[in-house]
Length: 171
Image (cartoon, rainbow, N blue to C red; front, side, top):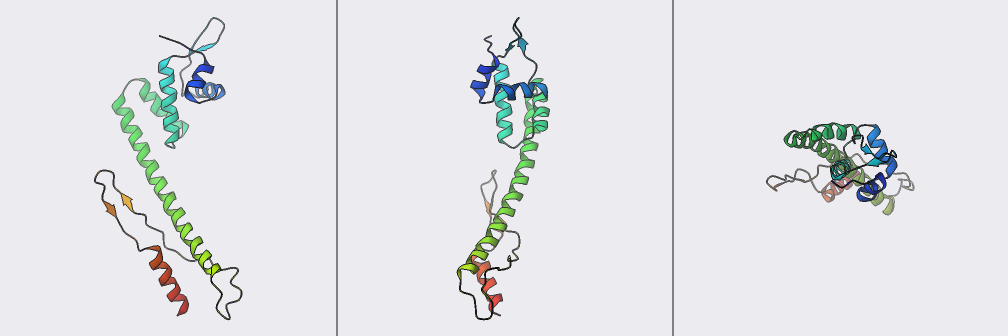
């Protein structure tokens, strides 16, 4: 089996040598074999493990979560690794959806403030330079279910909410 040093593993995987040494220190990578001079020697299996770590990081998994998966992966239980990875990914999906909904709600509030600032103030309203942040219910996003590709439209449009808001202001 071909072996290579840490600099080559770093080049092949896009991680720095220092990061690879850190991953060894925290148990993400096993301690590699060494040359008589003490240089680390890696092989294709180590490279595959580092690529797995990179993919897991891109999915937003923490190093602790990755360490747990790598431990299961190391003993060759693919089904167990897949199950654990799926659970972690599902948790990340829920967290990202929540963040996206919060961002969409905040975006809508900013858009409404921008519209108010663009419009000339009504007589007696002051200059309109410091409008209140509008109260906006959480924006529900359209969800596409991967298993059946159906959509769930559960919210009114932004235009309908703006029209309703304008009507309340006039009343």
